[in-house]
Amino acid sequence: MFFSDPLLYAMCMVETGAALFLLVYFIITLSDLECDYLNAQQCCSTLNMYVVPKMVAHLTMTALLILHWHWVLFLTALPTAVWIVYEYIKVPAGNPGVFDPTEIHNRGQLKRHMRDSLIHLGYNLLAFFMYLYCMIIALLKDNPIKQRDDEISSEF
Image (cartoon, rainbow, N blue to C red):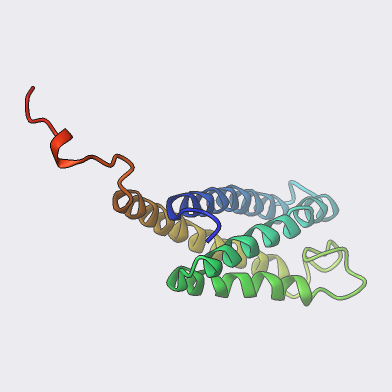
């Protein structure tokens, strides 16, 4: 164990909160592209810049959960980690990244990216509250104020 449970859950909450803000940014940028407020090159280069940090953060969080033997939380985080890695690996060799400006308007890729971002947003919102609940329970379990019975005074 590297960290205490409350610290681990707090770190997971920070990562999930950052992912929530990032996914809201993804959704806003993709909807701007859909409405032609942005061009495809600008949109895709902006979004591709954040794909690897999002993947590294989620994989780090998933690895920390398994190292701390939190199996249930690990199993809830594993499918999204696998999906993020799968999205990154399946990019063809000539493409600039997950979001390709020449292909994003073809074959419904824009709708697929929007759908995937909304699914990830829903998962991260649920995960944020799961980590918040686990952190509160862990804080209540660990009593930071250790008192002996004779030190407890009932006088006011």
